[in-house]
Picture 1 (tube, rainbow, N blue to C red):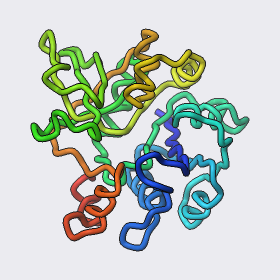
Picture 2: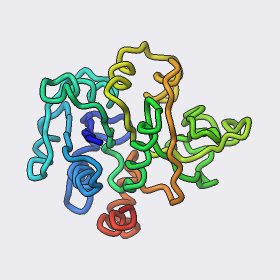
Picture 3: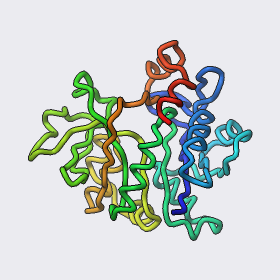
Picture 4: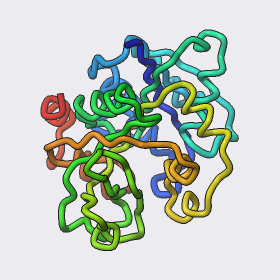
Length: 250
């Protein structure tokens, strides 16, 4: 299965200013994420698609394609759609969206998301058990998953207890997506929904329009995601070592 991995990057961040360029152990976050994407080994080509040349400069030393995209995209998926419309990628049929806040993403998460697409879902993603202390944490995206691996609901603002219904399991969502080319182009052509803006979760748009999202459930602890200043400080401290985290996730 030929898969194109795209790391869509927006320089502006509401919660962490210029997040892709913030340094961890002397490396910009986007460089660490790109190295992680390469090391996963699930895709023969990695594209860093960004709206700022400084981001592309930060990964110039890596074996990745660099594409300067428009500044007007409102989501990572819209940025990926721009990449797919380029002549060199018109034949790409499978895409992995590797998000810039996931420097320690487990290989199993990427493989699981792709497996969901191969099994027939339009979109695939991954999740891990939700730590009880994070049940009401708005920085943690929660997903309610049916016994058939369907994503039934995503939320930040709603507690895990409120989300659980009808036997659904509520999990900690990881920031990785796989999709077919057709699913990406359908997604970006859909109208935005109210919940998408309320929760700040772009995946609510395809869900609101009937597109299926399959969730691969992993039996591991959620890797540290870099969303806030405190996350960044944790990654910089002795609590998190980049090399150790990568080995644990591989």
